[in-house]
Length: 469
Image 1 (cartoon, rainbow, N blue to C red):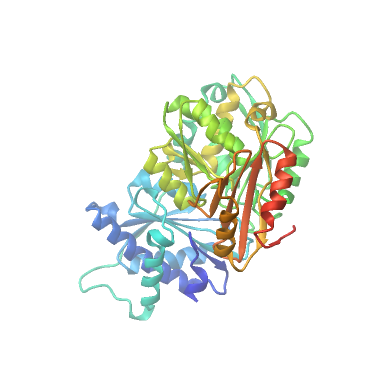
Image 2 (cartoon, rainbow, N blue to C red):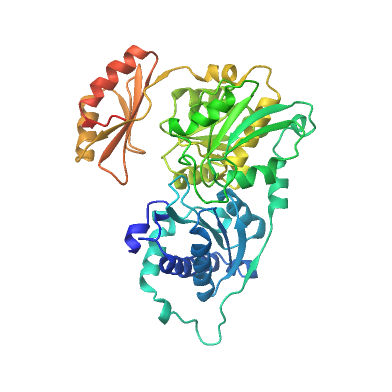
């Protein structure tokens, strides 16, 4: 059953089969073993180096899964700090604020309500993915049986306590809000769809009471552990209710958060979704004023305009593979100030290189504070090229197809950081392989629509059967 719940970046599956409380205990036990060893190997000897913080989202299965996860940790000798009902970035904050050995959020993010899982982070909130500890945790979990798990003689199980860190979290996030908004000198009207997820808890606790923010809430109630619409803001249908609210007029922007509030999609004043690469491009100017000359990390599927804008503002553009594990690592390695990917994850150096929907909200609100034009006009200069959007193709020979495609364009510049990227001068594209399905994913861009249409048709010949939505 363990093999069915471990994924590339986290642990996630339907509840109660295959994911149940028994597996939660195994994961807790194995995670504690891994994190305590990681801290010890780093030379950490203080009491917090044997302490793990645990948060959970609002799903019906989260309390029981969290209970068994924590018990497994304690049985392995770790102490536990229960953070309660929090958004995932709260756990990243708590790890660093308290100096813990790591942390786990019980969540299934944007998946339907019958899913659940665990997002694991180590010291300093560094991500634990398949190649950065998750495979080892799976191995350790497979080896342990609850009835045989015994601590060494004389060693007691760890203790558990609850901590309310909302005040510290609020103070940290509010420090990034422009003073003009905090004082009410500039008032912004913002519509927010919390998707019945953790933004429904986070937004009131962090952003209520700010004089310059007039928030119109939608689907903030998460008490039932169910969703009115799927908590995935990348799906256009899930934005319709927010767009209906914004159609009343008078809004400066709209936000739709996913289930655990680590990412969001931003809508302009007209209710039109803004591509996350273009939003990053717009935020670059503010970020580089805070950290002149720093690196900015972007998802390699992003518009070419993003790298251009970074350079124009004196920054250093840094491409990354898709996925939070890679984005966080690139931001840390490059000592960058901000990063973003098309999925709605935005990363910040001042959030310990982690992704945070709340921090992204603060960044957008602050950038709007000094703006003298509506958001749609502010974003317009970032739209320099025509994008195809992501197109999926069914393909059982992904590597072979990419090799043939590369051979078909011998004069183009290519690289293989993540799949195959092609730059033919007047058009450029990235074709990635799905980690879990027999799919190739194409993103293509050019200076005009005619070239995009022609080249998509041309490249498609190599990629298999196009999947129509």
